[in-house]
Image (cartoon, rainbow, N blue to C red):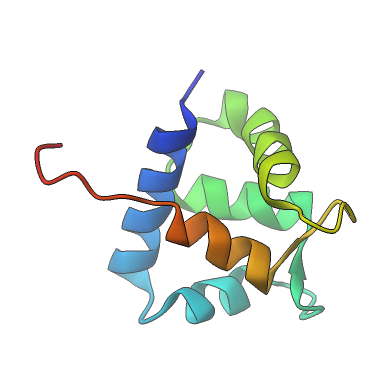
Length: 93
């Protein structure tokens, strides 16, 4: 299965290449504009980030478990920002 670091790196590449800011990316994937990303919305983000279809649901669940601070099963802006802030870019990779 894809590692957390690989997943976050692919998300970073998606955001960097297709959006001006992380806020723009969050707004784009927040289909219902409720200020939170549901599992389905995260799966859409993962698809755009080229995460293999077979593991998308599992990865979405793990991302929610890892970053959902208020345990509502959704990723709010602050949760999303924390995930983005955890991405470290290694120039050797």
